[in-house]
Image (cartoon, rainbow, N blue to C red; front, top):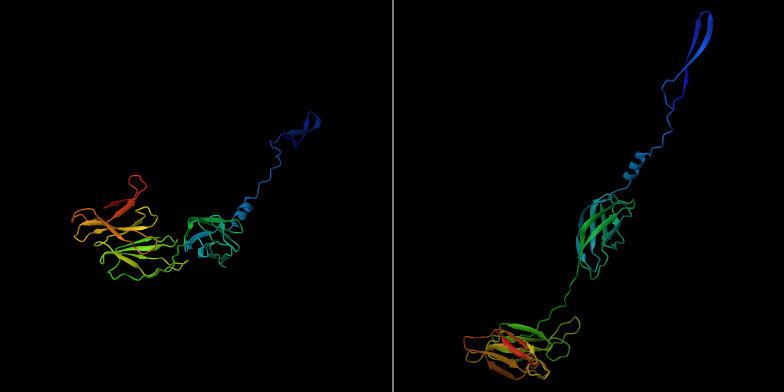
Length: 284
């Protein structure tokens, strides 16, 4: 909207008449509207700059047991006092941030039964956060009880060892084939808890050079029998069977020739081949 303003005062004298002429003119100026306040962008930028953004450069070690308790050091920059750490969905407690904000030390929380890689997230108290994808891997710790030496038969060493509960007392025994002396031996298991032990072996001679030993109830009397592929006294391939009597003392030897002198079986498999609920012997 244009507003006229007084611009000049003319005094004129025409034919003896004098008059005062007021001349008004529009000078083309406009009245500016009141401006809308503009946000202070400098202040917003300053607030953003006050949020410290942490940076992770390394995590050592990068793996540990699901039992927890692994001492871990995160190195980087921009870590604030009171920063929180997460491994996956697990929140770390008791973390310590160095005075210069370059290291974080902590012990991993337990993560029982859940091995695998997890993201590590560091979040500062001012809101800045960073994520190391797959930064820490949990693994399952496997431990074994102390081993046990057993009294050996006078032989160069066992050809084959089979853990099996021969006397059905709920504790594993050992059936062992000794090829050099041509015997099968049974070691009764005397283990208790984490303590592994075996009694003195009981042995029975079989045909020449038993290659291995298998166990099953061959004759249906509910006792564990031992079966071994070997040769007979003339070198012909045979299968030796020691019928069990419910103890770890190997039973009476029964053997069957299964080929010529050039056919010496080295493996047997005990299974019901024809579905008659009787154990068959497959040899190879």
